[in-house]
Amino acid sequence: MNDRIDAKSKLMTAAEAVRRFVKDGDMIALGGFTVSRNVMVIAREIIRQGRRDLHLVMHSHGQAMDILVGAGAVSRLELAYGGTGRFAPTGIRFRKAVQSGQVQVEDYSNFHMSLRFLAGALNLPFMPSRSGFETDVLGQQGFGPELRGRGKIPPYKAVVSSNPFNPDPEPVVLLPALTPDVALIHAQCVGEDGTVRIKGLTFLDIEQAKAASRVIVTCEEVVPAAFLRQDPDQNSLPPFLVDAVVPAPFGAHPTACHFFYDYDPRHLNMYRQVAGDDDRFRKYLDEWVYAVDDQEAYLAKVGAVDLMRVKANSNLGYAPGLDRR
Amino acid sequence: MARAYTDKEMMALTAGRFVSNGDVLFAGTGLSMLAATVAKRIHAPQAVVFFETGGIDPALAELPLAVADPRVMTGTCMNSGLIDAFSLLVHRRLRTIAFLGAAQIDPYGNINSTCLGDYRRPRVRFPGCGGACDAASQAFGVIIFMQQEKKRFVEKVDYLSSVGWLRGGDSRQRAGYARGGPMAVVTNLGVMKFEEESKRMYLSEYYPGVTAAQVVGDTGFELDVSRAKESVPPSAEELRILRQDVDPQRLILGPVAA
Image (cartoon, rainbow over all chains, first blue to last red; front, side, top):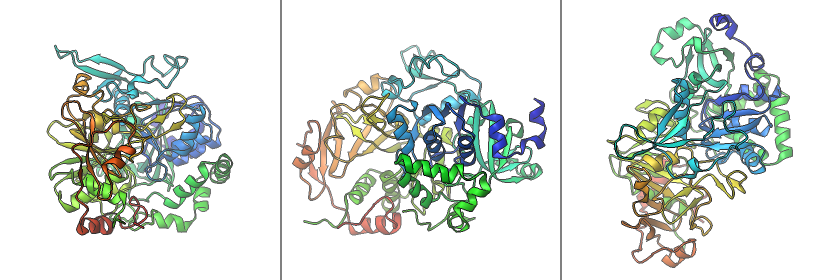
């Protein structure tokens, strides 16, 4: 517990956070949602450090998921949706990896995944749901019998049971809790003690963080904890749940971070052009992941002009008039 | 005869016509954003749009390109997260109408947005159901967008991602669904609805310039056309609002009519 109380020890680089808190084979919850607040700094660092056999759990994911899968860091995924909306309606490396059998996938719905993280956060074994009766989302198994019932993978994907409070038969779906090893979150502001303030939509980040054994938070700004205590209504997570605070300006680029920057249509369109081809994707990783040691080098590569282009308007929270074609 | 509007413009406006003032709209990406936004600006200003990500009633001064687009977080009545958004989707007091899209649909409105071929080693993988499975299960009603093609309108979907009327009749209700079900399917050729008793799809409208026979030819199962009528074409005002106010960059509408 002591390592969690020493506030100063939480501030660290992405390299140190991954070295200390992410192991091969870990179950990792990805915060953010499709084109917003993907934890890109940690995703790139996981690839650079060569982590393998990861098990990703998420609701709807986007860019961080796609490069982690493309780089070969992932063996298993549980998710509801893999893509970035109009830029890649299906994640390009995700699609290739599923079709080639490189990864095993277990599909759920977004509500299912939300309830599974909530169950983990509340230390409950499962949550009931009314979504998906007699669909293939519940009926088809993605994970083979060799995976089921081992480690963090429960013996059943879901169980259809009956509401015990209703004397008449009334089916309910029971969904197993998720307790990831690590949750990765990108926030706008974090206190040096680890207090987290997420602006805009929180998606499922708070439940994911509470369900996880370890929490890495990257952030646009590290601010004094005393500042966050002046308006605590705005805060999202208490400091003692956070293990690592990684200062990472533009840390979600090329995805958006509300009130800091928009998603970067040029980068996402460029990615769509290259990701479908194995050689060009390898070059993308060489150029944008392996050749950049840290976020400073990454931002130098993106360049000031492109960063200013996506800079958010402080009234609207996004970049009005941005060319998004 | 060349039409003065594109398929996508007709689809967005047609779907928008299903929206009533006071509806609570669960919108996804693409055409559903257009339909919801255009309906709000034309005839249903009191309709509320919300997104599964937690953005509730955003200003939508610019068109969002994903449900997590920062544009769904601005000018909202409140920002929240997935759990809050789903609590609205399933709310007993609300008439939540969801707009969904898919790769395949069967005669009972069951849809596939997950894969073609074997699930564990698919020939083509799609993104997955996202929140569509939840909306199809628990919303008050559902409107589905499709491209009308034989390979998409199939007798049996490769993977049932999101439930429609299941096997027709009362099978949906018997499976445990308390309400909801697809109201209409809006395609590039027309509008399909579902028979009251059997819940099987039938052709309700074909667009001006399209024939019922053409719709049948692009459908991979038997489609009753005995009740089909020609749709009302879009008005100049509807098109102006859609083109100038809703999607001036044509981000979702795509290229202008030839």
